[in-house]
Image (cartoon, rainbow, N blue to C red; front, side, top):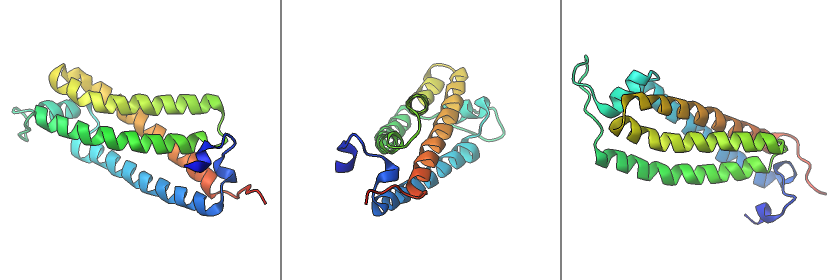
Length: 167
């Protein structure tokens, strides 16, 4: 953390052992993101109707699906809010330490943040407001997934490419 306090800190100039630690973290985050996407695609589905069914339930379909309870949504939101906040904090710091332009950093970080907030809100809105709010979930998943891929990819590239360590 001391390294981040320096205003001139960049991943490319960080000592190799530190960059390898960050690269390991990024690999683990990439696995987490891929499992999240797999869950969303395989268990919920990418159609707004399937998303709405997952949260609102459906007693008329081929498979009986019960609506998520208030307690279930609260438990998921509680766990995800803390986890997502910490992962976003670390990824944002690593991404800010890359050589990407300030404009790119702002757009990508804003998109990821919007996707994360939407991902936390959409289940509640879909369950208790309207089935059409499933579109918010879908849009949030896209923003979140693409944005996290950029954060991990750009930061990983900066960690693994040849360094500019000070001599």
